[in-house]
Figure 1 (spheres, rainbow over the protein chains, first blue to last red):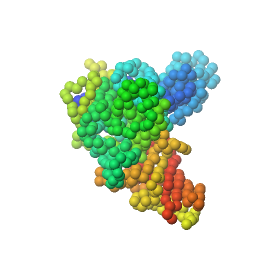
Figure 2: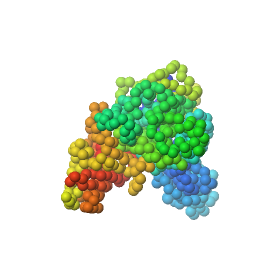
Figure 3: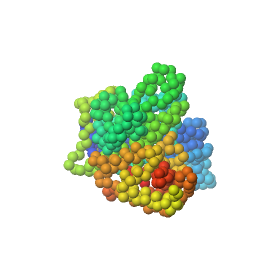
Figure 4: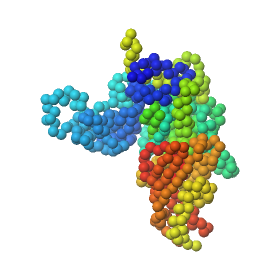
Length: 447
Length: 159
C-alpha cells in the first residue's frame, strides 16, 4: 500500500486552500485512487444520445479508466453498461460505434445479453445446471453502471451504486447545458461527425484547469493569435473588410487582461464553474441571417434574446468535461495515466438551426482543438513542460492563489473577477470531497 | 503552352522538397489565392465544412501557420520540428489541357520529429493544379491520413 490509499487525511493535506501538492499531477497512486474514488462517485459524462439514435445503436468509451458501452435499449432508453463479458472478461464491443440489433453476443463463447445487460442465452447451458451458476455474479449478465441520467440529450453516469444525486451534484451549473440546447429552435442538438482525438502527455487536471485560466491566452497564444493580428494589420485592408475566419476565431485570444478581468467567472458547488459571465471571446461573432427570426418564432422575443445574449465562454463540469454553449462544443479529458490524457472534442448541430453555425463550430474545433491546430500546439507545450517541470524537487507545491481569500466557501454560487483562480480551487475542493467520500480510514480503524 | 505528365510529376516532387527544406515562402507562392489545404478527420470524408476536419485552411491561415513557425515566442517550436516526405511516383488522374487543370494523386510516407519524439504517417495527397500565366499552381490540396481516426500528438508542420 502506498501513502494515500485509505488515508483521507493525506488526501486532504494535498490541497491547502491556495496551493496544491504536485502529487495530484504526477503520482501514479493518486491517479489510481482518482479512478477508484473520484470517477466512481462523481457524475461523469458518457456521450450524447444522438450518438445512439436507434434501438440497438451502441457507442463505446471510457468513464475514468472504465471501459463502458452506451446503448439504446429496446424500450428506447439509453443504458450504460460495463464493456466486459461476465464470463471471461472479453470486451463485448471493440469498435467505437455500431448497431447490435436486439442483443449483444460475446465473440468468444457466444454468451448473449439483452441491450439492458440482462443475460439472454448461453450455448450448451445444461453444463451449468446444478452448479449454483444462477447465484454467481456472472449469471446476472453484463453489469450496468450505478446510475444513468439523460439530461437534455447528454448522458451522464455515476459508476457507484449509491451516492450523490444528479441534481445535487450539478445544481445550477445545468444552466450552461440548458443554454447550449436552447440555442436550437427545436431545443435539440445532434452530434456532427466524429470527435477530434488529441493525445497529451500530461495530467488530465492541467487541461481542466486551463479551461478557466484567463491569464494564459495572451501569453501562451501570442505565437498564434498575436501573429494572426500582426499579419492582418500588415495586409492593411480598407476598413470594413470582412475578417478572415482566422481573425474572427483566433484573434480574440489576444484580448488584454482587462477584457478577461471584466468577463467574470462564476463558480458552483461540486467543482463546476464557467468563464464569460458578462461577455467572452465568443461575443463578437458575426450574425447569421435568419437565425434570430427562427429563435423568436420558437421562444418568443424576450426568451430568444435572453438565450442568445448569454455568451458563456468555457463551462467546466467537474471532473472532466468542458462545454462551450455559444458554439455547441464539448471536450472530454479522458485520464489514461497520471501523465497521459486523451482529449476528445465533439461538436453538435442545432436542430432546425442554420448550417452556417455548424460550419463555424467545426471551424473553431479544427482551428483551436485539433492535433494540427496552432493554438492546440501552444497549449500542449505548456502542459507537458509543466508535467516535466513538476518532477523538480526544488519545490513541491503549485500555486493557485490569484484573488484568493481566506476561508473560501465553495458551497455557494459566486461570481467574481474573471482572472480569479477560484474555479481551480473550487475543483480541488470537490476533488478532496469525492476522493474521500467513500474512502476507508485505516488509521481510524487501527485506533 | 501545354504541360506534360512529367512536368506535373516533377511539380509534386518539388513541392514536398520545399516543405522538407522549410522553403515556405516559395511553397506559399505555389498557391492560388482562393485555394484550400484540406486534411479530413474521417476516412472518406466528403464535407470539409459542416463536420470537423483536421485542417481546412485558406491562404491567410497557411501564411499564419508558416509565420508562426519562426516567431520569437513560438514555444512549441523551441527547438524546431523537422519533417521528411518519401513519395511514390504521382499518378496523373486528370489532364484537361484546354482548361489548364490537372489532378494528381500521390501516396507518401511523412515523418516529423522534434526533441526525442518522431512519428510516421501514411498519406494520400490529392492535388488540383492549374496552369496560370504559364506556371503550374496549387488550386487545392487534400491530404488523407491513413489512420485519420487515431489519437495524435502534435502534428506541427505540413504533411
